[in-house]
Length: 387
Ligand SMILES: NC(=O)c1ccc[n+]([C@@H]2O[C@H](COP(=O)([O-])OP(=O)(O)OC[C@H]3O[C@@H](n4cnc5c(N)ncnc54)[C@H](OP(=O)(O)O)[C@@H]3O)[C@@H](O)[C@H]2O)c1
Image (cartoon, rainbow, N blue to C red; front, side, top):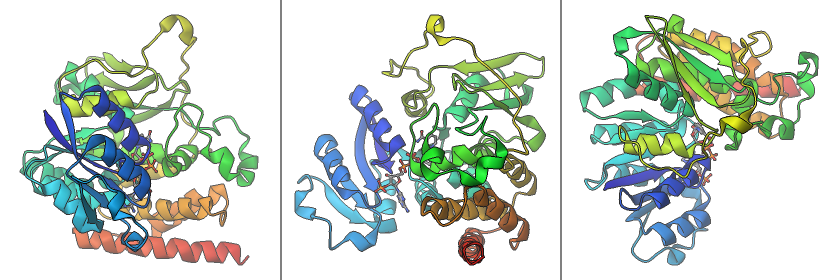
């Protein structure tokens, strides 16, 4: 039996993680849950799973939350201190990091500091603090297991050879909703169009990231830190059907792929039962009805975000924190209708290029760059809207 704390339990990954827990009641016990502002669904989850704690991370909600409606055996905690208390509890074996954005970094660092394994959906954690997070995991003997379907696929493919036999990895990308849309019409892309992902049903931020292909840029950086790769060992290929989740090429030329219908419950479960495989409720492959699988090279001019991902892998230091914060701020502004779709990557490119770079930053340095980039993104937005 593994005791789990699930951060971001009300989101897309969070609710699918609870689905996995429902299917494996003899293996997985939920002892802590967190949400940011959706406290009612959080309390409903507590009524079903009877965790020891729940945390509401938005402290501004303290007057709104009806604490008396929480399951009687569950303690209500608040903010970052609540997250820290949950993830460091001696009873906890694994923390599922399913929050969105750089807000997930501290929870993962606290969990690793306390010697817990982390199942990581929150890729922003590695984009911002890759060296700090991986060094801490190594020092404390903790496993850092990916939930992202591409990185789970890479982990699964890597069971077929030694790490020094890996020539390169090939991350697949669906290409998002605008793979075929004429580039000259990109500035008229609406929020609804950008949120409509062709193969995955995800949270709002990652859906926009998939539309700009910034999601793949973040995954390139995530892969570098998870698997210790250099930029020339990472390739991206467009595969619109999202059936081949990624591949590993070994030095002898053999390529191992992980293949399954798009269903996040499979990689979530693998991260929680690794290295064991157990029956999963996830959709099963039916080759007869699948049709053809297509692969094409990514168009770096259409999706310039991809170049930024490789640039951050080469630069390291504070560049991931700058890119991530600029992107989070720009996506939020796009979702508020304040900037055009293409402005998202323009802002990221500009702030990545001009941020105060440091090659060996501390956590405080990363936080300072994160703050700087968010403020600059707001100034950028104001200058665009005043034109
Ligand atoms: N969805 C996918 O299929 C998928 C696949 C691979 C990787 N990922 C990654 O997994 C992470 C979660 O994605 P998602 O699609 O599940 O997002 P989501 O549906 O938007 O859910 C985000 C979760 O994080 C919580 N949250 C939001 N802001 C927060 C903050 N400032 N502090 C603490 N918690 C906060 C939300 O709480 P409230 O509900 O209260 O707002 C919610 O529980 C992202 O890093 C994403 O890139 C997602």
